[in-house]
Image (cartoon, rainbow, N blue to C red; front, side):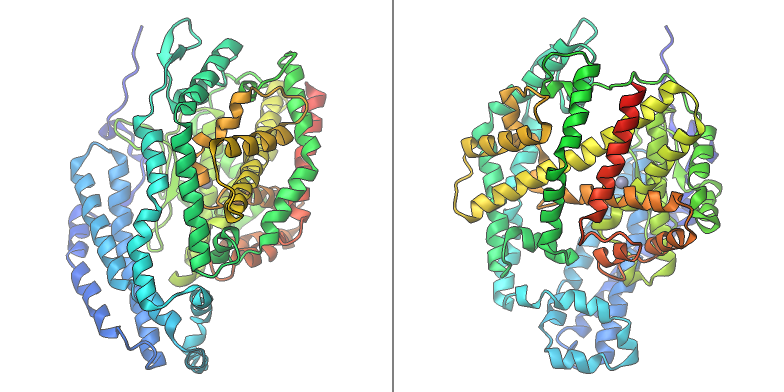
Length: 598
Ligand SMILES: [Zn+2]
C-alpha cells in the first residue's frame, strides 16, 4: 500500500499558489510599514473634543481615520494570509500577533470618534452638510447618527463598555464546553470498528448508509449534550437575557429590533420570512416524504435526513476542468465580470492546493488596497468546484465594490455577503444541468440544489423561528428552563419536518448544540440571501441585459446604501414576500424534476 504524503509548501507548483508579493514585495517591506504605525495613530488626539467646532476638522478626522484603517488592513491582510499558508510557521504567526495587537491599539485610539460625532447637535450637522465636501460623508454620518436615540450619556456608555466583555460569557462558556471539554463516547465507524466520536465525525457518520451507524452517532450526540442540559440551558438563558437587557438599556422595542437596527431592517422582513416559509412547509414535507420513499424506510427519523439520496458520484474534476466550468457558468454575467474573473487566475489570486500546515477550509479575503485572495484546499471533488465558484462570487463582489466605491462605502454588509457567492453556485448548477446528459450527474445536481434549500432556507428559518420564540418568552418573563426549551424546540421541529417523520424525542435537545443561537438573530440572513440568489440567478439567465447590468451594479455598490435598498435596485425587494416565494417556487420545480427522474 502506498501512503500519499502531504506536500510541503515549497513543493507546490508556483502557479498553484497565490501571489502575495502583490501586497508587499517582501517581509522587509512589510516591516518598514509596520514601523510607521505609531506615528500614524498618535495625531488623532489632536482632533479630540474639536469635531463639532468646524466642518473642515470633522472631514479631516474622518479622512485620517479611513486612511489609518486602510493602512492597518493592508498590514493585517499580508500577515494573515502568510500565516494561513502554514500555521506551523512561527515567523508569520509572530507577525500576525504583532499586527493584531497593534490593530486593537488603533481601535482604542480611534474609539472616541463615533461617540463624539453622535453627540454633535443636529443643527450643527445640518450646517456642516451645506459644505459640498461634506455631502460625500452624508450617508456615513446618517448611519452613525441614527444611533443617537440609542446612545446613553458618556458615563453610562463607559460603564456599558466595561461590562461588554461579561455579556459574552454565556457564549464563551458554551464554546469552551462545545469545543474543548466535551467528550463523546465511542461509536461504530461504519467499517466494522469503533471510533471516538467528534463534531466532524458526527457530520460524516450521519451520512452513513448503515442506519445503525447513523442512529448510534445520533444517540451519542444527544446523550452527551443531554448530560449538560442544565448547564446549556443556563448559557442560552444568559445569552438571551443579555440581548433583552441590552435592547432595553438602548431604548429598542425588542431584542429582535435591536439586532435588525444596524442594517436598517424592519421587523416585518423577519416575520414575513418565517410566515411565508411556514405557509409553504408542505413543499418541504414533500421532500422529506421523497427521502422516506427512496430510503425505503417505514419510519423516517431525524438521523435519516443526511444520507445522500443519490450515491456520491465517483468523478474527479481536475483543476483545469474546474476553471473551465467556473469560466463558462459566469458567461451570462457579461464581459466585464468575465475579464475580472480571468485575472483571478492569471494574476494568481488563488491558493489552490492543500499542503502541510495550511489552514483548512476555504475563504475569500483581501482588503481595500489589495486584490481579493482566495484560499482553497482543492481536492478534485464536485463539492470543491462549488466551493471555488462560491469564493469567486465573494471575491468578485469585493473587487467590484472596492474598485467602484471610496473606502468608507466599500465594505458590504453581512446581510448581502452571501448573495453573490450563492448566485454563482446557482449559475454553476444551471450550467452543469444544461450541459450534461449523464442521468446520475443530473440527479446529483438536483439533489444538491434541494439540499441547499433544505439546509439554507428551511433549517435556518426553523432556527430563526425558535430564536424569536425564546427571546419573546424571555421578554415576557417566562423562564427558559430545560423543559421550556425542549418543548418549544420539539414543537417547531415537528411542524417543519411534517407527518413523514417520526422524530426521536431526543431531537428536542438540538437547541443545546447549535452555536448560532448565541449569534443574535444571524441565521435568517442565510435564508434571505439564498432566496435573493435564487431570484438573481434566474434574472441573469433570462438573458435580460437590463437585469444583468443591475446585478453588476449591485456588486459595485458596497455599503453606499442600506442593504435592502441595494438589493431592491436589482429588483429583489425583501420588504415584500415575492423573493421568498420565488425561491420556494424554484425549490418546487427542482423537487418536481428530482421526483420524476427518481
Ligand atoms: Zn460564503
